[in-house]
Amino acid sequence: MKETFGRKLFICINVVALILLMIACVYPLVYVLFASFSDSTQLMAHKGLLFTPLGFNLDTYKAVFENDMILTGYMNTLFILVVGVTISIFLTSLGAYFLSRKGVMFKNLILGFIIFTMFFSGGLIPFFLTVKGYGLYNTLWAVILPTVINTYNLIIMRTSFSQIPESLVESATIDGAGHLTVLFRIILPLSMAIIAVMILYYGVGIWNAWFNAMIFLNDRTLFPLQLVLKEILIQNDTSAMMQGTTNAADTYKISETLKYGVIVVATLPILMIYPLLQKYFVNGVMIGAIKG
Amino acid sequence: MKANQISLKPNPINRHKLKESFWQRAINDVKKNKVLYLIVSPVVLFYVLFCYVPMYGVLIAFQRFEPALGVFGSDWVGFDNFKDFFTNIYFWRVLRNTLTISLNSLIFGFPAPIILALSIYELTAKRFVKMVQTVTYLPYFISVVVVVGLIKDFTSSSGIITQFFSMFGMPIQSMLMDKSLFVPIYIISDIWQGIGWGSIIYLAALTSINTELYEACRIDGGGRVRQLITVTLPGIMPTIVILLILRLGGILSVGYEKIILMYNEATFETADVISSFVYRAGLQERNWSFATAVGLFNSVINIMVLIGANYLSRKLTDSEASLW
Image (tube, rainbow over all chains, first blue to last red; front, side):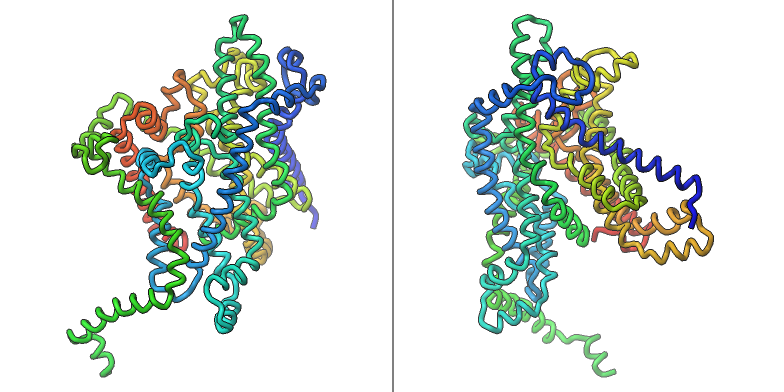
């Protein structure tokens, strides 16, 4: 079938538009990467887009890795990540297993009890006062525990568990296996793909979170990376506002280079693993979509 | 016939038996599934501790709450905190800003992923499709802090976006200090971050459309536009409607995370929304009860809008496009 001129034109415009969108998505990050390797005086004099680093130096990264706040921020984020994701996966599996069983009388009641929290919450202030009331204020647990189960993830995992053939569970039960054995010996080994999705979803969520850390943490040595990053970016903003004064020029220069380096260091880990695991991420959206 | 009569007129003794057997069944069920209930108990505990206890905490919206006295000891003041909010000088400002941001995000942000999905669906080269997907999903994984950091940098007085627009006569100053630019910057950066990820669900719906329908449309002499209107759009309509209901349910919930990173005193006039107002009133000014009342007002409106939107969609479309 021959394609008309109009059709060809449409295809051209479509492809060009998508290429422009891709550039818009990726260029800001490329700019930051180039800027982070650039020489700061050259960068400040430069106007317009960057297509290559201006000069090449690693001073920025030296400054980033010598900054105590950033290093402790990294360690705190890693701690929260490992502990948080472990507890999250464990609890989400327990919940998903229960919700995927058939013939349990109060299952729908408990499901409703869980789903209700997606539509109504006490709001920020009661949440804050409650968590503070548990004595979690200024501990890393205040950052880990309140978000340790994500209802959306729980529903995804339940949907995935309930797709495992019931006959497998039945035959194991006949052989005398209890629920814990069924969960840990049969369901979980068959669910590695969904567990990968969950690790990634929870992991990205924890890596990028900053708000709870800001409201619950007072001690600067507990700050996760994103909170440190926020301070550096905000700090830069305040010095940028008093740009005219001469003694601020030095601080401005330092934060100018530091800023890009920190963004790269804080974002690269996720952007590196993401393309490798893209199919798992997308899987999760699909499974979630079945339930609506 | 006889069986029918019996079921129509259950005698009192039978009903009593039925009632008793509910509790009997409950006890038997808990006995039988003891381990299952034990398994789910930490999960239930989580929801009680971090979702339901804070829900109980909304009671302080009706009090003059003092942390030292607690929920039991504080004075009850009825709806005073709500009245304070409705008569607050900022009431209309935060309401207007919240609606402005969410309506703009509905009008511009909601269709964006649908258009992207349709656009990707038209492509034929598999590798190009994969590349477009990988690249456009990328911004979704960047943290809010970094996104706002990027915005601040690019729109600062020396930023590349400011430089670009200054060629068209825009003054050289930080764009985030200009209150008329706050909403556009907020919406565009949201689209930038979410367009790719949001398109996944529509692409899934598109690929599940039966290709025979397109064939049939072609045989009937339907061109590309006809195919789009009669096959493609109806095919993804249930997905669109469900996501639209969810979006409508959140019409009054513009999140505070991005706002409080982006705004400053120069842009409060257009940037301060209900949630950021709650954050400032509660966590910065320690007006616990007042802020809780504002938050509760917000939640109640949200849930009412959600129920209303779902009801409308049930009435207007087939029952398939409903949340419950």
